[in-house]
Every structure is written in C-alpha cells, then in structure tokens.
Image 1 (cartoon, one colour):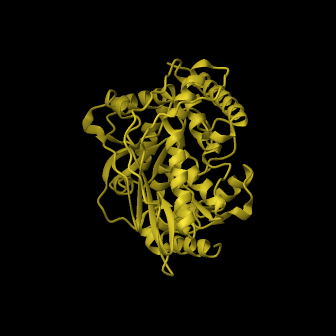
Image 2 (cartoon, helix red, strand yellow):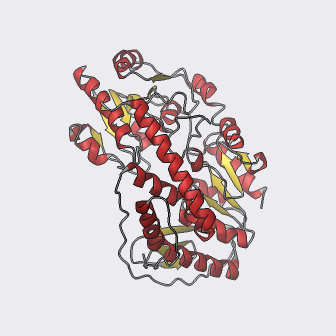
Image 3 (spheres, one colour):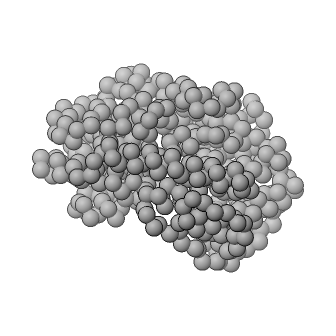
Length: 427
C-alpha cells in the first residue's frame, strides 16, 4: 500500500515546483499570461507522470465569423438558462459564446460558435526551463492554442468595436479562452462578473492541488459568491472585499423530497485529476470494505475522469454514467451519499440526503463545511458503523438551513434576484 503522507508530500512538492516554473516562465513571457492555469496543470502532470508528453493537435479548418452583434446584449459562458432568463431585462438579451472543436463556426443574434482550428503556431520564442520535458510541453501547449487565442481576441475586438456588450458573466475566469474574453473586456471597459463555481476550501496545508489558484487572482471585475464563508476565504487569499458580492446560489433549493429512496450508498466520484496514487488510496480500500460487508452501493461518475480506473475495479452494474445536470436528481434517489473533497457533499445535505465525507488522505477540514447530517471519517473501517447509523436518517429542512446559512445566503429565486440586482447595480 502506498503511504499517504508520502503521497501528500509528493503532491505538495509537485505543486510547489509547478508554481515556481510557471511563475518564472510567465514573468519572462508575459504575452502568455492568459495560459497561466494551463501551464500550472501541464507542469504538474509532467512532474507527476515522469516522461508525460503533451500531444500536438491536428490542424483543422475554421470558418470566419462576422463579428457583428446588434442591439443591447451581454455575453455569457457556462451560465444556466433559468438564470439567463432572469438576467435578460430592459431589452438586454444574452449572447451565448461557445468554443467548439468541430469544423463549424457561425454567428447568430443570440450566439457565437467559435471553432478551434488548432492551427499550429511555430513557437519561436527561446526559453529554457529547468525541466526539459516541461519545456517541450509548454511549447506544445503554445503551439496548440495560441493562434486560436489570438483569433478569438481579434474576433472579440471586432465585435466590441462594432457594438460592445453591456457586461459579461462567466462561470469561471481561470481557463485560457475565458481569460481572453476578460482581456478584451478590459480594453473596452466592459464589466465582467464571475459566478462562484464550487465550494471554497479553507486556507491551510494539504488542500487539493491549486485549490487557491482556482479562485485567485480574480481576473474579472466582480465575483458573485454563495455566502459569508466564501467571502471570508477570498479575502484571505488577497481579493478586495469590494469586488466580492454575496448573492447565494440560484441552482440550489431546500425542498422536501417525496421520492421513495433506495437503501443504498451513492458514492459521488471525485475528480482525482493527475492524482493516481490518491485515487487508489481512496477507492481500493473503500470498495474492499463495502464488498466484504455486503453494503449495496453505486458510483456516480463525475465527468468520467476516473471511468477507466473504476470500470477495472467494480462491476459495471454499480456504475452510473455521468450526464450533465443529472447529479441533483441522482442524489434524491438515494438514502445516503459518500464523497471525498467536493461540493457534492454539501449538495447532498441541501437535497436532504445525509452524507459521509471520506477524508482518505487525512487532509483535515479542507472545506470547513459542517452539518448534523454530515459525518467525516478518515479510517475506511469506520464506514460500516457510520453507514448503519446514517442510512435511515431523514434530515429536517430547518436544521439543514441552519447548517448551510454561512455557506449559502440565498437560494433559488431569491439568489437569482440578488444576482440580477448586483449586476445591474454595477453597470
């Protein structure tokens, strides 16, 4: 069995080196700053998987877009339709921006489909990083993406010169193409609002890799957060509180559930990206204990990141395939869930489903979320006892609201109204 402390120490060292290499590279080559988050993970994967080589992508054709959007509009990426309908007011409509790998690109009044061409841009800049494989992978990353990033920037400049949007709302501002949208917005002084995309961690050691870098620095103008806990966390990692607006989460509602629940354990897959040792330390002992004690369970895949590994570990009948937007419905069908370090644990409690947090790596109180209906364990052998204790618990709505109040200030319709008022109060 791999030693947990050794794995955590290795992860921390890979993260430290990846940050050092990326920071040094961006400082010398600031023109690639929008790719910062991609460089971090590329460096981490290279260090984690010795000899990992990033593959060049095949060049595709692309279709030129008009760059003309008329009327009053705002740009969005990754925002749910229900919220968009509420944001659309005073004749300002949403313009949906999609990035696609298909050979199709077109522009309509309400959407832009931007096709990636993967047009290989020869990386002529001369840089020599301390790790030769990372050096090569950074060049491949630039070759695969930088030409498309420039095309996107040129299209946005053309659009904004013709008719700039009133504002932009994004589900995150980490990834390279969203960073390009933010960059263009800054040139035209278009305000950018970022929605909190997941539960914020606590500022401490032994977080998941790049936990703080998932939120800071803030590239948009404002971030619309769920509650006081998120605001406090963001302040601690350096974001000015004037840029943090508490709006709640419009995707969550605490409502009674009349569905007859299955007396089974629903394991919600963790995105163990680039962390194979941690995945094995988490899943192997867990599945062994469940099978030995004949505890019925299903595993709901998350984005299918760990699909291949899990399929080799358990019977396919125990796997629920990932489908966008399905998790809330799935949670409500089960009497008990188990998660690791994700928002899904809180989402279970909100949906009046008790949950077990399996801290398989002894990271400690990473998320800072506590509830009468959440049991945190570090020893896999505790699961049998906890399962028997919690499988028949029915969470009370008022108790759940009390447990959640510092994490989520507003729900559903109230949160949507708060978001709309916050946006229109700033533009």
